[in-house]
Amino acid sequence: MFAVTAAALLVAMCLAMCRALLGPTAYDRVLALNNIGTMTVVLIAVLGFLNGRPDFLDLALAYALINFIGTIAVLKYIEYGDLGTSGGPRRRNASRR
Amino acid sequence: MMAQVLSVLVWALLLSGAFFLVTGALGMVRLPDVFTRMHAAGMADTMGAGLILVGLCVHSGVNLVTLRLLLVLAFLWFTSPIATHALAKAALSGGAEPYTLAGGDEGERGTEAEGGGMS
Amino acid sequence: MNRVLWLWGILFALWLPLSDHYEPLFLFFGVLTCTIAVFVGARMGIVDRESVPVQLVWRGALYLPWLVWEIFKSNVRVARIILTPRLRVDPSIVHFRASQLTDLGRFIYANSITLTPGTVTTGIVGDDFEVHAIVQEEIDGSEENEMNRRVVVLEGEGA
Image: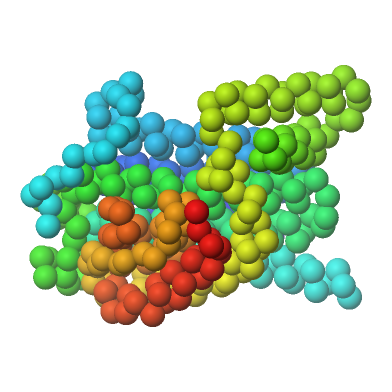
C-alpha cells in the first residue's frame, strides 16, 4: 500500500511540476514549488516505510523546515530584489482593486 | 482481528490522503489564477499530507517514529498557512490581479490568459 | 522566568527523543544546547506570551479537534469544486472584522482561516481581515463567525 501512495505522490508531483513549468507568473511557480516540497516531505516519509527504514523521517523533518524557509526567501527576493532588506510595512499597490 | 481493522484503517487513510493530494495537484493545473490555485495547494498541504502522515502513524504504532511523524505534521501545519499568506501578500503587492468571474470567461482554463496578460 | 523554564523544558523534551541517545555525554550536549538556545532567546527578549504561549495549551487542545473537522469539511468542498468537470469558481475578496483583543489571537484566527482551504487571509489592517475566497457564496459569514467566536474563547481574557 505504501507503493500505491508513493505512486500517487509522484503523479501529483508531476502535475504540480507542469504548473511550475507553465505558470504565467513567478508566484505560480513559487506556489507550485512549495507544493512539490510539501509532497517531497510526505514522499520521504512514505519511502522510509516502503523500505522498512523509518529513519528517513529526520530528513523529512529537516526538509519541511528548509522548504518553508526557502519559499519565504524566494518570495522576499522576488518582492524586494535582495535578501538584505529588512521587512517592515509593505507598500500596497494602489492600482489593485 | 485487531490487526485487520488497523490494516484497513491504514489503507483508508493513505488512499484518501493520496486522493486529496492528487486532487490538489489537479486543481493546481486546472484553476485559473494564482489565488485560486493557493486553495488547491492548501488542500494538499492540510488534508493530503495530514491523512497520509496519520495513516503512517497508525501503521507504526506508538513509538519514536510516531512522534517524528507528528512533528513533521505539526511543522507542515504551522508553516503552510504562513507561506501561503506571504505568497498571497507578495502576489497582491506585486500587481497580480485576482481572477473574477466578471472579468473573464467562465470555465476558461487560462494557462496563459490570467496573470501573464493582466499583471 | 517561568516561561524561560517552560521553553527549556519543551526544547529538551523535543531534543531527547529526536536524538534517542541516553548516554551521559549526549545528555550533557542536549542540556548545553537547550541552555544556549534559551539564553540567546531570553537575551533577545523574545520569550514572552506570544512566542511561548503555554497559557493556551489546554484551551488549544479543545480548539484543535474542531479546527481539524472544519478543515476536513472545507477540503471536501474544494475537492468537489476542482473535480466538477465545468469549473464553478467565483473568487472574490471579502472583509471581516475580527474581535480578538491580542495580536496572538489575531494571528491564530488568520492562520486558521488560511489553513481551511477555500479561504486565504491576504491582509490584516488592525482588526480588519481581507480574505480571498474561492467561491463567494460559501462565505456567508456564519462559519467565520463561529471560528471568530472560538478563537476569542481560545484567547481567554486577553492581554
